[in-house]
Image: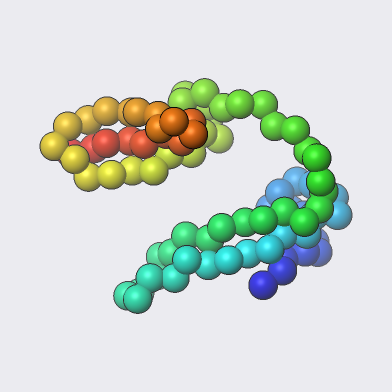
Length: 81
C-alpha cells in the first residue's frame, strides 16, 4: 500500500511525502507493526537520536532484568521485568 496526501503530510510534517507501508500482521488480533519505505522526499538527513530524546524508539523485551542496550546497528533494546 502507498500512503500520500494531506493525512500523510500531517503525520510526517513533510510536503510531498509518499510512503510504502508494509504491515507485519500477526496471526492473532492487532496491534501490529508497519515497516515504512519513503519514496519521496529522497535524501532527507536526520540527526542521530539519543536514548533520552522524545523521538527515540526502542524495542521492548520482557526480561529478568531492567536494562537499555544497543545492538551493533544502533537499535535500542529495552529489557524490562
